[in-house]
Length: 410
Image 1 (cartoon, rainbow, N blue to C red):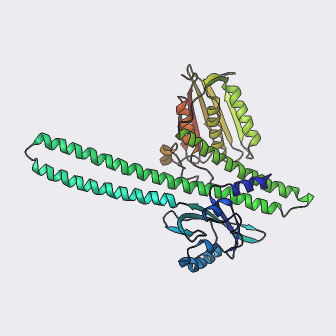
Image 2: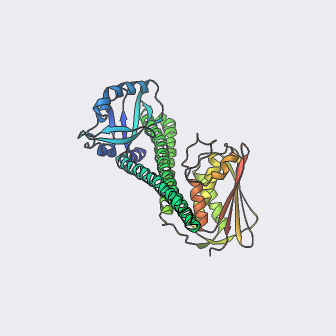
């Protein structure tokens, strides 16, 4: 089943994936890679990787490749480089490439993740041209206004009007430029994050499947089970990443709306905690506290489930094993108050104001896997339900997230 899962991820990925050996021979390329380079499926297998490099730099690429093999390490490329590749037809096009490696049967294999960004480059070039044109117009318009001001020096009323108009035009143009700049930065962060987060579990799956094949005997079941658990963990990580992307896309398109129903939150939170205990491979003591035997609320159950699972999962991820995670539920006259407290690494004070921003991750968790989307999605779900969330955290001591939600969705 796990080989089928990996094959589906490999073959149906929307990123080109090419695996080559230490001599630069292509061992395997997925369908998307063959498509963007205009080859038939599996036609690339057995060819040198340099067949995809423009002729003028193929010789240099051989030395680059050999140098990389001496010290292989995960490496993102293309964020500040103008990289080119060549199709079967000989046509060159712009690409983004990131590299990683793994070992199989004692041999190093290089995994190249390739994105065709030709269309994006054209759009960026056009945007740059438009930006320069706008800036030129600002300069030209400013000069025209300055000349007009000299001519209208004796007309105070007209002078003031021209000044106000110029300021509005300049402010509008600056706003347009900032918005375009922000959009480009957001796209770059998304591509970089997605490439990294998919590459890690895919590499883990490849390694584990290769190792499983080395243990065919019945007495090797313990070793096989270990690698099967690694594959399960990697597949779960990929599923969580995809779910985050799908949720964010639906929220951005306005396709998510609150559908409230009446249910007992105490029963709901106890079921959610039991589910997490059953599915989590970590060892944490999750304590659920509530003085009310029943808290009836009228809210969107699935949204609340996403909020609760996300916050508890974060508490587990960023806390040491055997530590206590405390969940406290209580109600006031009109609100449900839910707090989730851990004894983990905490969040640096300077990072706390950015917690709910898209793609943001605190500086002390960059070595742990994550998309930086979870808390942004939690905040947007709570906004749809009329709720609020706040964070209290001390670095190296722990974090508490407090959710306040109306008992009745209006």
